Amino acid sequence: MTWPAWIPQWLRGRAPEADVRRMPDAPAPSHRRMSGEYLALHKYLNDRYASTVVLTFQQIEALLGFTLPPVAKSDPAWWTAVTAATDMRYQDAWKLADRTAVPNLPARIIVFPRGT
Image (cartoon, rainbow, N blue to C red; front, side, top):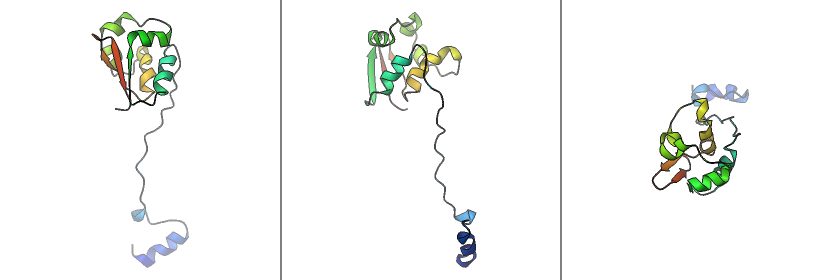
C-alpha cells in the first residue's frame, strides 16, 4: 500500500494490517494459587529475592511443621518429576514461586534456583 493510500485508513483509526507491529504475546498468567499444607514453603521461596535458595530437609520440615514423606528423602523424582498428577500438587510450592527443585539427597539439601 502506498503512502497516500493508507492516510484515509489511518485517519479512521485503522492502520493497514501490513504495517501493524505487534509485541510478542506474553505468557498467559497462571491463575493457580498455592494452598494446602505446603503453603509455608511456597511463601518462603516466593518471598526470597535470592536467585538461589538452599534448604536442608530439617529447615523445610521446620517451615512446614511436619516431616517430609520418606520418599522425599530417598527419591529425587519426588522433587523433579514433571507431571500434572494431582498427587504431586506439593510441587506447586516451588513451581508457583518460579523455582525448580534440585535435590542433593546425600547432603540432605534441596537447591531452589529461580526461573529455569
